[in-house]
Length: 453
Image (cartoon, rainbow, N blue to C red):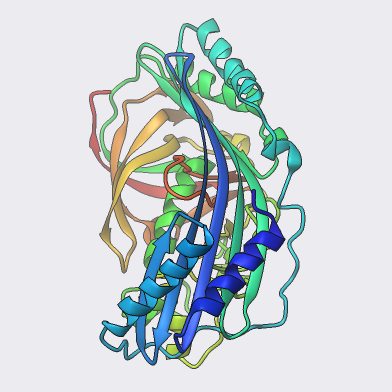
């Protein structure tokens, strides 16, 4: 890795080379490694080291961008020059006011770099994968998945005085275990690879694969449901994409925008974006170098707020909450979401259910109506029938068509335990993000179709 001194030197070099009215420079460097496995054996072990510089040049209200993954002195100067040339050719952006200026340092987020994670070897990843594969083989099942580890440096500076640097590590493991007629899923993520409970992930995924063998048919319809954390992740993820951004409110396409200060879901639901919670992937600043703030989005069912970057904040004469994405994405995004836990447990939820459906996770989900956060998708990797307070049999996967807001308006119970859920697929630039979520019991959930598997 380059280190803080070298990254800051390159940032200053780029700023000095610019003749634009305002200039922003973003540098990211990563060491990433990945071990993939299929049919219970490792078939791929790869590693990469890469660095990228992106420059945003501003002349008045004209904005241009250029980037390169060559970080030599000449390439840095060329990238700045290209951004300036592109900016001069643009039309004015009437909504652009300014890049953000420097702010007082926000709450410090320490311990994001774990040396043991940075130095984890292919043999250590293989050992973790072996735990899953041997467990699967013992039950005549096969394991598939990936274990990714890496280190990321991020440096951001602009000509108004912003200068930020951070170095962090992360690790992400996911697996699908397949039996002859069933499947199970498990995942775990942390900045400290040693905190990922490989055995628990293997035990859960294999048990689901074994227990979901020979599923039975069940008629579509409305059922009480118990959603594991991975299924809840999907609901919160789509709420984020559709409603938690200030730009969505400004464009009239956010359910929060029409209901600020009003109940939108059950009072048991509280959702915040907390960049300082180390149970998640805490991070101190956004991709404009603005210190991140904790934002309460839904408080006991009531819509309370959205997240801002400098672009959307300037349109309302407000301050950014530190939620910018890398330019040229001119919209903010919550990347440290947490749905607060309750007082229940999955065991208690099952015990108090007379007849319902237990869902491990959803997949292949698509948005139907953003204002109601209506989705359609499928259950996957462990769907079971609950009868008289017990899980009695596996059922064939079901298609659902449901409004997340309506489903979350009738919450029977929220688990005390929350888990960090991610869907990191090891593609694109490395930047760890996930959502802290509990399990939920919902009074009614609409299953609109059945499958043959």
